[in-house]
Length: 96
Image 1 (cartoon, rainbow, N blue to C red):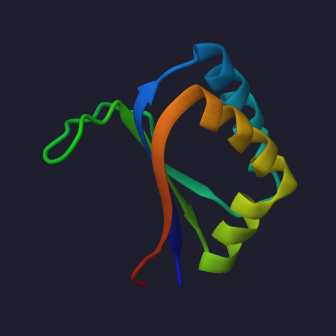
Image 2 (image 1 turned 45 degrees about the horizontal axis):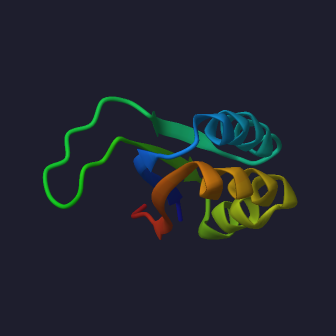
C-alpha cells in the first residue's frame, strides 16, 4: 500500500544549512522507489500556523518510506534540516 512522506516547513532559520540539506536530501533518494508529488510549491495556510511550503513524496510501501527516512544518507541530511528550519514531518499510509 502506498505511503507518503510529508514535510511541512514553517520557517527557515539558516539558509546555508538548508542549502546543504537540499543537496544531501536529494542524493539520499537515489536507489529508493520514490515519486515526488509536491515540492516546495505555492501554499495557502487554511488552518493553523503559517506554512512556508511543503514536500510530499510517494513510496510504494510504508516500509520503503521508513527505509529511506532511516537510511544513513537521509539521516546525514536530516541533521542539516534540523539546524536550518522548523518543520513538521510524518509518514502516512495511503489508500490503494
